[in-house]
Structures are given as C-alpha cells and as structure tokens.
Length: 381
Image (cartoon, rainbow, N blue to C red; front, side, top):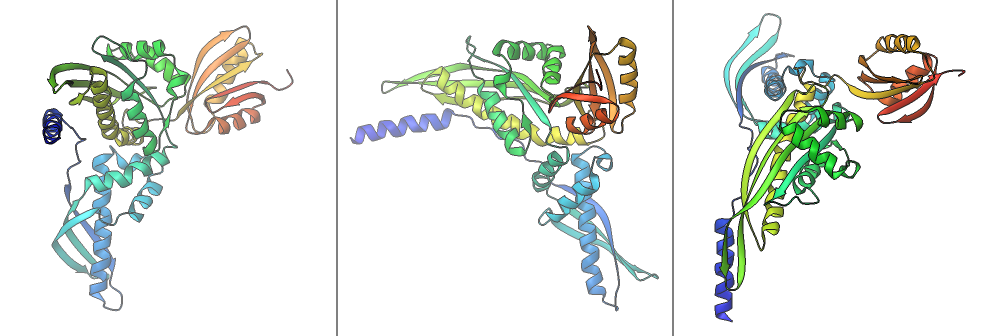
C-alpha cells in the first residue's frame, strides 16, 4: 500500500512538473497627470479639496479609458458609457500624489495630481459597458483544429472561446448553423489571407466580427510510469479577430501551451481548452474597444439583408436611393436582381425592426422579418 501511494505521488509530481500553464497578460497600470476643480462654498477649503480630488480622479479614469479605446470621445453613447463607468469607479485609481493646488479669484479651488489607474480593474468595468452600448455585437468563431493528423469533429478551442465571449455579453453565431466543411474551408481561406468566404458566412449570419484561426496539438514526449503511459502534448493556436464588413484586423494572437494526458486526444482537449480560454480572455474586450473607438475598424452599424420582391430594375435603383437617405443608414449595397426580386445589404446604426418600420413609411409592405433580414414589396402588388 505504501509503495502504491509513493508511485501515485511520483506520477502526480511528473504531471505537475511537465505541464505548462499560461494566462492572459494583465494590463499594466498607467500613470497620468490630471487636474480637478471645485467651488469653495462658505470658505470650506477642505470640502473643496475633496471635491476637486474626486473631479481629478474622474479625469484620470477618462484618460485611462482613452488608453483602452482609440479616440474615446468619438465612441457611440460616450456620455452614457462614461457615466456608467464613473458609477463603478471605486478602486480604479490606486494611488495619487498632489503636484500643485491653488485658488483663483472666482472662488474655484484647483488641484493637479499624478494618479495611477488600475487598467485591469478599468478593463473589467469598461468592457461590459461598451459591449452593452454596442447593442451586444455578434461574433462568429471559425477555428480549424488538428490533433496530430486527425481533425476532431468538434472544435474545443471554439467551445472554450464561445463560453468566454458569451459571459462577456456577446451574441454568438451558433456553430451548429454552419456545416463542418464550410467552417473549416472558411478558416483555412482566411488564414491564407483570403477572407472572402469568412466574410460571406459572417454576412449570412449577420455577424459583426469574425474570429478565425487554426490550432494544432501533437505529442512531444510520452512516458510509461507504473503501467500507465503519460503523454506530453503541446498545443499551438493562431487566431485573429476582424470586422466582417471592412476586414480590418482587431487583434492577432499566437500562443502555445503544454498539458499532460492519458492519451494524445486527452492531452489535446486539455490544451485546446486552455488556449481557447486564454485567447478569449485576451480578445473579448479588445474587440469591443475596436468596434467602439472611431478608428478604421470601428463598426459603422449593422448589416441587414433586404429583399424587395415584385419591382422593376429602375424601381430597384429608386429604392436604393430612398433607403440611402433614411436616418442612420450608413450604406446600401445592391447584391442581386433576378426575376423582379432584388437584394440589398443595408448598413444601419439600428435594428432590422427599425428599418422595417421606415420601409413601411416609404410605401413598402413588410412580408417577412428576422433579426438580420427584411422581406418587402411595394404596397398594392
């Protein structure tokens, strides 16, 4: 019995020593110099100092937001987002030093400080607020996996990333809606630099962002200990996130990890879960910040597929012009015209429901509706 316990202990030690565990990089704190101000009421300078400090802390947090989001002031619903972050701002400023304080003749107390902002805490507060402000953007995951020379039926990396993105507040395209071969081909073409199939799938499922990549796992060693073969498995993951409409890269990640298993497949599943979780944690808020930030990869709106039935080609052109002048419509793209039926991709800062209402006001009867598609025809036909 004693020898069996020793053998199990040795086996456990080998598992611990050989297994490599990674984690997402924690955002480093930032130090900013900011000012705050407050009115001096009833000569109460102490109170004015406290209020000026609160004001300075808010300015420090806003600067921290600017580090995370490119062109933060151009963010949609910026005022709402900022107020929600300020409401949860306790603990975001982890330290400060007073550099200067002064009063002006108009009775205002001014304070200049050097403040340290915890970017990890700010990230955890700001990220969910931005995702909510964006209207819960839709993400599609396409990861091509290999275990040795085999292709598993289900992508473990996708499943792990899906859980992370869902918990963060994103909507996810159901992997079961995309065929296995279609998904694999899209991922392979995207990794080779051709995003066409991935973008086509994204548009089909109304996805704002495509996260695509490839993962592989292989045994780098194996040992037989007391009758049990232990496999050392290394996993590698390359993954990118791009805005589906513009093909602008949001984030790119190349990571690896090691795990142990009783078989190659067992170790591969473990390492793929680890890599998928790590990639999801690294990307989940970067995606939201890129969509919100006003830069070249910022999301201009949602793409709604509009099918108009029973019209002529000239009427289709008139329809396109009328829709392009609807408030919050960013762009209109004609995709096909066959047998009196025309399809458009309408990019709008709003929902399919709001677009359907506007189409009815333009004189079209809505005959079909879903979250990503509107079907209509001229009234009376």
